[in-house]
Image 1 (cartoon, rainbow, N blue to C red):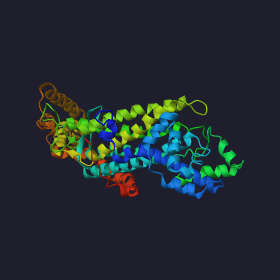
Image 2 (cartoon, one colour):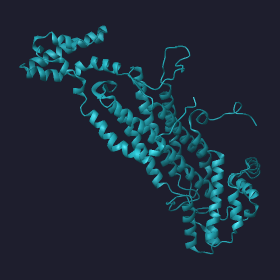
Image 3 (cartoon, rainbow, N blue to C red):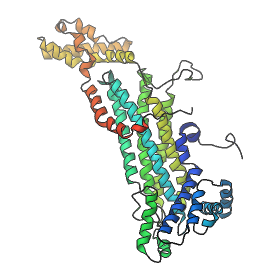
Length: 477
């Protein structure tokens, strides 16, 4: 067997996703879940009257995790069928149960139901990590609730906001994502015990035409795995649209992450805010002074992967023929795990970033001071009118002084001298410019909005996920 240096290994596993998530999509988890599905099917069939012995059940229960993967691989090479390979492997481990393993079932009984079980566990892990990001952004917003900063629209200077208020914009998108994850968890169905084409014909035969027992079997197996919803009808597979719904929900997180990290990258260039930078970290192999936003760049990169993966389940769902076709299988083996692994990797990075964001108030204040005179002109005009001036005359003077000051900035690279020009003008001599130019006059309700958002939106989430909030992450690279 070649080692990992001789074969391709997914970077999502080696560099991005957590151990928890990679284990959820491991072969051991998948095939161990198959065995549990076979066990619960047999237990329910026995309870409903089929001739299944307790020693068969007991032997199956004792061999849920001691999977002989080499033997399974040999069987699969022989049969060219992964489910039958594992039926035989399980039967070899539990020979007394061999006659009743997979009784009445089709491959999708184990394949589809296991995927839904694993996706549900993965969604719960994603929800927990989202809650950590929301918590940390809420704390950050509260800390900087009143720190006035230049707002940007079209990436051009706009009215002031606060650093904390801007963080609530990021946080709210993740809140929306968490709501979608929770909706998926609440509505995710079990495929259930449906048979080869979804008609349950094989089970009806096993129970001598007793429709009630077939329905009870379906519900009993679903309940054994904690599902209170079962697909109302299926073909051979559950509706592949469910994959589309789940992966699209993951793509929402990628959108939010990409937006926030792009913002941080832009602010890093302005030297207003930075992601964490470790003591021995190297920003560039050539330019030793650089502090590149590597974590945020990595997040946007992974986010684009998720957004691209989200198109595939939709195409797969639309391509299914009649009761099923197998051209979904190879695609889904890649898309579903990779979407979860990538989003898990994104959240690993975001927990690190949002818990350690660096803010530079003096740089922020300097940029505010440079731009605020232009934004304050309406307030200056009102103050001058209150001091006895003529509104139209003052407006024209401010217009002329503003354009002259702008020319100094744009054409000669000089500081904004608008206030000096107005100070020198007799018509503005009675104005207290220090009072008029206080940034707090221009941030509106931003601090109060932060308080209201944290109290009304973030706090209820923290109460719900309080056991998850101390989750630690360690970035692989």
